Image (cartoon, rainbow, N blue to C red; front, top):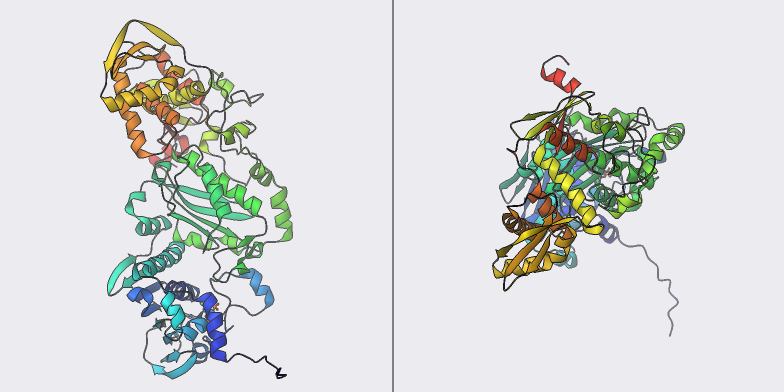
Length: 628
Ligand code: ADP
Ligand code: MG
């Protein structure tokens, strides 16, 4: 018999809470994030995180922030209880990390919670104990100003979830990840993390750079390039790792939007594309980037744990991020001595506080800035024509895209426009490099048989002869490897080179590519080769050593990174043939080298990312002499 009773009934509160809590608190690390964010929102300058048993038995956050009144302390654990939203419009002005009023309610639904809190204006504090969403104890307590919230035995009442927790090392890793993401965004706040009684992190207040190095490792200290661009529409600042810091594993990559850590494959792609050709395709650069924009332009509401956000206009942001990073990378090699540490107060950028109007938005997207960002060819990438022999020819705008960069498909696509002046005033400052003009008639000076001093319209540059030559040869070889071979001069008396068996196998593999590059080499008996011809511009006499050294260098690249065979060969040869420090150069040689360098498609760095020259500008020199 069918029963005709109505079936729907309301869930008991504690079950409803537990279900809702599942979205917010998935593991101890979720509580870490929520509690740290609450402490930040409370204006704390010191935040301590204590965990035991990878957070499974204890997650506690102690802050010196605003504290709560007795009533607020009780209210804080109610679902949808928040002090951060009053009106629906507030949703579009969110500056705090939290706003849903769900975290504490969720934690209280799945754990035992102890809260101690006191405001500066209150004499005594409040102590509250909650378990399974029920208040067990509430009483006055002596406590410092601020708040301490301890979550104990998470999921004690939801065994299925507790059993789902991973091993301690895995859960601890999640906790450390969350800790790093919050601590990174607030270098002006002291943070510590103590696990099982041992202090794992102790982060004094300081600059963003100091915070990054403390969190990610000292090896980044001299390897960070400052990224900083401001517009009416948005600001970006932070640091990007120099190309040599790129790692095989994705890891040290952080994006923050209005100080909130986010994941965005789209923006990550923008950064990766800025590094194109500087790092091997399968490696990942380090970056810590902060984007600040009007909260009305983003929707942080799309995901309960808020690691994903939607931008009103993704394309602008993409172009902006890409341009800012490119710009920074182009700059670092020419101004390595100017290292601007970001002040922690930058976190409170005043552009952030300014109201963002429709009019402003219209202006922003109509501006040249927007259009220059949305074009493929960024101003920061200077392309040139290989035929240009004189600097004065180099600076006026080339008529057409004659030098098809062979470095990448991406660059091949670009329109080859050469920008040398800031097209937008008040937009992104153009790099110093872009305005650099070498004085053609001024004599060149070689220093320490290694550096070449070249006068510019605005100071001077110091070229490293080996690095510069390496860049020049690299581009020449790349072109030859893919197109017209380099002319070879035949040796009258072929030299024979005996090699070890592994080296012989390797050389055998490289012969076709070497031929393109001007080397005529043939197998001449077991493991022995005969050099029949060498590139026209290689001194004869040391071909044998040259081949051996090239193989050594090739093997070095082999174990190091996964370039294509040809790329490795070209890099090895460029390195091998570049003039070495100590070689005295004539005026003519120096002039040719400088000419060739500035005809390169990327003149400011070696293929491996070291600077080829350093620029000293007049205003910088003045500052050095205390006059600026
Ligand atoms: P939300 O952060 O979304 O407002 P929570 O559940 O995380 O929601 O917190 C609820 C409220 O409790 C907050 O709005 C805030 O008023 C108060 N609160 C939570 N943690 C703290 C803290 N550490 N110091 C002061 N007030 C806090
Ligand atoms: Mg919160």
